[in-house]
Image 1 (cartoon, rainbow, N blue to C red):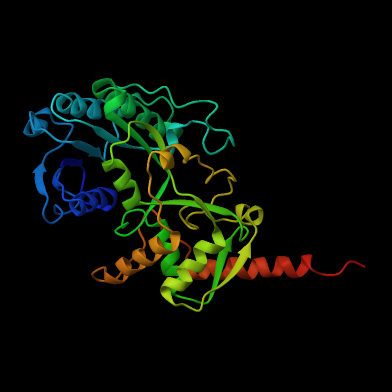
Image 2: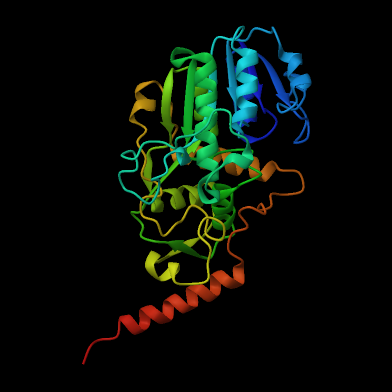
Length: 338
């Protein structure tokens, strides 16, 4: 099997390359060469998809599957898809759950359908800055579907993607590191609150399987206490968890997703429907395996693992202040009435 990965040097793209090579495929990566070297054993073609002259390096080359992990602007994706459609069998586009404008505010976010994207749009054409990401991704889906048709195209609407080599976002990696440091850990919400995470390697395998259609590629929900217990088990720490109610946390000066990763005051944030993807063969490994493998990678990072600017997490002093304040609230609440 010949595989072309658009991207391929970091996180999800890297996972696609590794999974393809493990299956015996010949892999070519096309990217700007700015995010790191090509994975070992992959052919590197350096270029910018926004530059037609760079894309000509791919003209006429046959591939069994194209996996696009880096497409964002519909006009640029359309240019690539049109060039590759005559010689490539299948195009798997990594999209996002954000193509549903009702997610996550609406419990039944499917009812409103997906954004009415434009397959020829540029970044400047996005009508709503607050929903720019989902609108543009919806346009990218349309751009690929127009060139490849419904039987040769996958729209992989990813949720929260985690796993080894996640150095740019680092939501799960922050939690693993925090639990590894031990002590009293602020745990948001309730122990049974559901969290749904998909391992990058599982998404990669699904993309390479070339399912036709649009799929929500998300993990099965697990209780938050199970996720944190997996972090404690993998790291061997002595961490204890103090559960802090979401309503109270939302009133504090704390940012969801960035200061407290994988947490939001929005109750529908992890409510997805991955039934179609699982029916089509989406593999989902247990959360404890993802956590253990991610921790092993973190320990091997040259110079030590550090949180990303995108997800800095709670500073220790702020976490302590929040825990102390919460403890004071609880003491008042637990006083017997007269």
